[in-house]
Image (tube, rainbow, N blue to C red; front, side, top):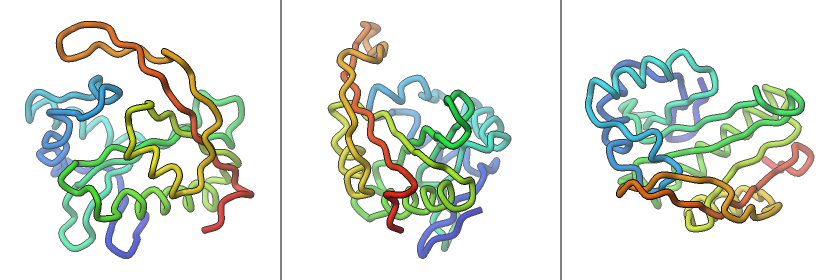
Length: 176
């Protein structure tokens, strides 16, 4: 568990299903359409799965333990155990309040200082301005753009290829 000034970052719990459904019933960006949930029953199964995944983190308001988004961090498919892929997804009702910056900063501190991460990176689609700005606020470096890198199936069933940026940060560059 990670505690910040306003947030608790913790494993998922069964009670998070309703809040997870709230923002995954209609993902705003195509990269999260594969996480789309259609019912409370699906959300309950998803929360149970995430509760056993050490790389999934529920982001909750400290005062009421309400789920407002989630973070993920994974180093399982990386060339070395010190490189981590990171990402986030928040309920849009909680945007522009600093929660993403606060929680991701705490996650980065945890990964660099507790897990011994050497390098963190995030994939961000070229149209996802909010995540690009978050990466920049956290002093992540844009290392490149992969043209038509990822394919998603859109809501109408057509295949769509997105240009994707990779942002990264080294432990020695982290100033928090």
